[in-house]
Image: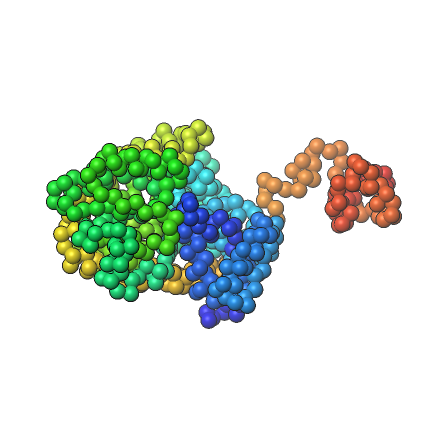
Length: 528
């Protein structure tokens, strides 16, 4: 047990729990949902918590969460509250977690409890949406503190976030002469997987059985792509398919492609089928539906090489190379965002787990799309799809690297073993959760040792005050807060409010509030 933490909450945080962020829809799997579901399992298995504090938009979300918790931790307790009480439960834990990077909104919402009441913790998934970039642009003026944190899942993500903050701070400096800015912590903590879900007990036997079950010949050279089959938000496969067709017609006649994934809609599925047939008509392709989750490990065991040529700014980390490495197969990926962290290539500091293919884009890419997103005149998926058209993956290097891998079973075996070791050491969830634990302890330490005069006491945000402050100038007179008239008879109150014009206001008589006092004057129940 970690020293100084409550025995029932060894990972002391309250979580925003919306089911669609933590449950995968098999018919349309999304990366953030896969990451959320994997994280939730890790939380139950490795947090050590017997008490789970959650904030839910609806009661049924709490019931679903507790069912998941009971599966992993029989007899555990769940404390669930609605959004309006999120600060109370977060203060009890000391940290509030939201599975997105929108910290500015929660920083303002925290003000009624005071900004030193608890820490905020968010995580980067994608950075290219207008909503996320606008949020990052508000960090400099929102009451975000250095005891808050935004987890960056890759070094590239951390560098990108830092760039957003620097540009906004420079703008404010030029516009208002500001000289002091406070940022949240920006630790790099990757996403994780459960390696045991992917590791075969016997690599050779698993490969033989998987190929037999999938109808793949034992001597075929199988390259695998896995994930959402979305031209707009994941990858545009035309250059890769042409390259595979050329290799199959020249150096590697036994080359076959295994595709495991789901398109977001039937039209996109048809585009993949039609495009693959047109660009690689002689290449044998095995199509395995991504909704067949029982085959997720088998398709990896059946493969010789895993390929992911991500060319889309919507990708920030990328979980599929980790799954491939855990399954013991080498990775051939684009040198793009988080792939640069996860896949090690020859002549780097650690044992190689595959190859990374250079990517290139031209200065100025995305100006028109940014303008369209700013004015809400372009669809997000179309915008990132257009951007991906201007991001090139070096196909010559791809072909050379794939040919090297296919030609050497010893190299593939060595890279596969190195990949398995790397995942167990760096990307297993039990390792990642310990990094979360250390981070939360560090945030709590910062919050508890801040200079008292620097904290903001409990109050409403300056731009959302009570009506007497924000719009009191509308009125002829504002009665002072110490105006406390003698209350009228309660029976008379009930009679007055029972008419059809006011019976809707069931909360009015519950509290002695400024609203109730004003209503007494409105109805003539008291005199000045």
